[in-house]
Amino acid sequence: MATVQFGSLTLHTNSIGWQPTVVSAFSQGKAKGVSHPATVTGPSGLEIDLAVFMSDEGEGMVHCPDPSGVPSDYARLAHGARLGVYAGDHGEWIIKQLRLLRFSPTLGWGNPSQTSIEELDKLVDGSVTALLVNLGLEAIGPKLDVLGVRGNDLALRWSSNSGPELPLLAYSITRILPIFKALN
Image (tube, rainbow, N blue to C red; front, side):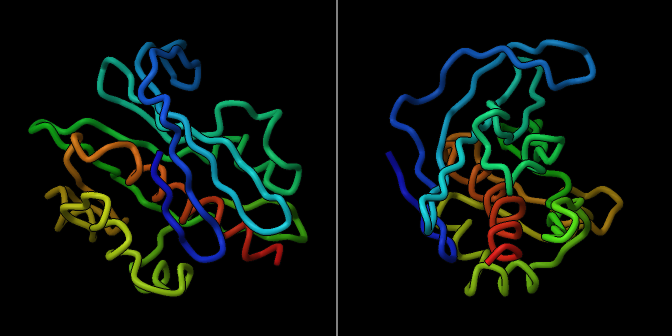
């Protein structure tokens, strides 16, 4: 079981490991693959269960697998705020669009939009690159630089042998942490 501190929150990966899973969050209906559970904890008893899922076809996501278990203030996480994860052609995993959830406490809602490394550094009160490099990050930057495809969204690339922590942390920083900061 690994733990990673980011801001006031902590990511805990589960020692259960990768488990066979079927999810129904893809356009093709149900998808078979494997998932790895984790939990994010924080002050005042905050506890959010999440998982990284990778389908047999190489398309995956980080999401909250049980929407009923998401605290009410964090309900946006249970409604389409997942983060896409993809298998690359050379044994790597990639995130093609690392976007930051812009959460409004007044509306209780927000949507992911483009962000920058500098903005993420401010969010984590440190270096997001250093946090991710410690988990196996090979590259972070604009899609053109990291993946060689058009676009200004941030993209990530890492070895699929690095473990589940990197995509789980990327989700936690860009989805859970913005809500936490907006509410506190």
